[in-house]
Length: 434
Image 1 (tube, rainbow, N blue to C red):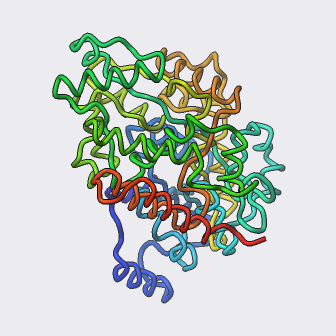
Image 2 (cartoon, rainbow, N blue to C red):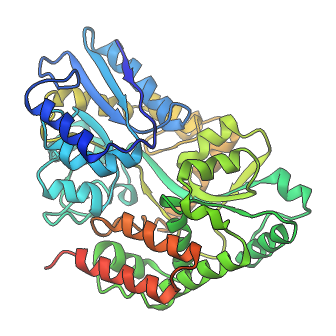
């Protein structure tokens, strides 16, 4: 039987609560302690039930239980931030789940792999043929070197979807104010100027979580190339935060704040609030990821569309979040079986039709027009090697630094040069020494 224990998607466990929970786990107490009887698969993920991934994983749970008589899935929905902040401690305890969705990149999955907290999946990947279903651009985030650097080495995670960022726009609001869909960067800024003149803040954003920093990174990417990305993300050369790209990104971001493209109150907002602002028709534009697609499709009551960020071949994106199997997992074979089901054509096709970006679907089986457009744009990006990963990936703790520094740009409490100085210092401290 499928058992779910729901949590707020943005719940953060306090240190005291976590220590108490771990103390119970270490004593063998608590209903969440794992069992190695082969009758329970403990699964954690943070996809909302209305998202494409949430719908696909629910179908996978049903398929898993149908093909594993007598085995139940004990599912716990965790918040992204919750897993981000507590995973190292939880995975180093007896309360580790059997299978968990986790963020990809050097600072997250890469770091846990170096700490010995994740199972090396290489043999299982080869045995089950997952490597033959995952393209080169997507698999980058699956493999990590001994130093925890993505792109080579052992497999520590399996992505069964891909993701990328795009411009979501409210067609009804654009029509109301007589603004055409932008096809160039100049037309995008002209559209935002028109909205500001009409008293409308054009961009939905959130400075307290990831959205604001992704605007900053995308602006920098518009002046960058693949070699620049590889230096920053893969340490293939020295990253200079005062180069032309980063300087343009920070200065343009600050200029957009001054022009009223971002709301001043956005410094304290979270990602959920930015998404809801778009859903409610308050913000005409949101630059964010394909993970919102299914939710907008089900909740937005107006005509909306998407387009790739104009004027550049690069945008944020990668393989999706990873299925990882904790080293301390007690039912690893069940975890491998569940991953295998999520990689099946049945689940992959469903994921695509619900508005996700599957890695192993039959394109002809995806019938929804918006979903087809989503997948086509991803194929365009992938075909031109345009996936530039995410700004918080390179070094541990960089996500929090980016949040703090970009908030300063929004509030005007620091100049772009000072913000770039802080980013350089934090980045340099975290780069592995070779």
